[in-house]
Image 1 (cartoon, rainbow, N blue to C red):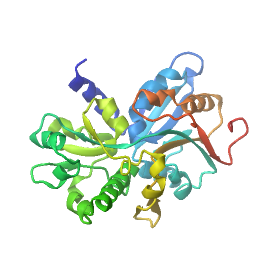
Image 2: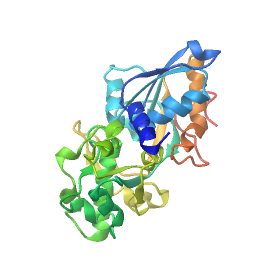
Image 3: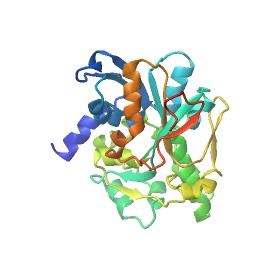
Image 4: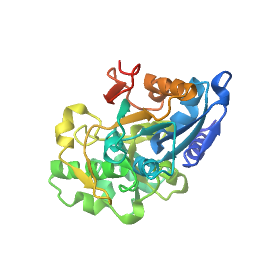
Length: 294
């Protein structure tokens, strides 16, 4: 399969709709509703499904939006996995969760556009983003952690470069796309560059520029510096900068859901998709049910 055809398939997987995928024998007749962060959709619908015998009904959205769907009673998944562990407490008051993976921000670019090549060739990663003729894409910070983490990265870079208006100069309202559709904009030429998770670029075989550890939100050594930036969501809650991590919780305890969740905790389903699975994962937080802690 060509690289571009492969990206077409992955973009279709990332449409944000529910995908029912048949499993194998045994628990295959048990359907487990799984609501995940948009950046986890391909890993959940593909690799996780292959590694479990239950049938997964995978739905994906930006994590803030997904958490609000559950909080408002509009969704009742057996498993909920989000791209910011703080959402479990900030929006859901979930009694426990398991941190299963990390990630980091990169600047991905479209190698087939002039603007994308300018991003690739620039001396610094921020310089092309303020130039005419380079279109930039991002997700909505009010709906998705990737959106407010993009703001954080630019604010951290602005401080280090002594360019106080950098974020203001780069960010425009019409740059916002759903997380599950962001890199698909490369296919149409609508976007030359986008700040995305490393896993998103790896899954779609798009080239990217590394961001400095002090701004990519992926290095725990810079946790204190990350914590200096924040973003207030429309409901008044505040998202704070921190090393990027993903967490999941199990909301029902039937056999099929329990089996899928145990597979999620192993983390191997995320490794091949570009996520960071550290030795300390899974890390259990809160009032964890008996049999899960340790």
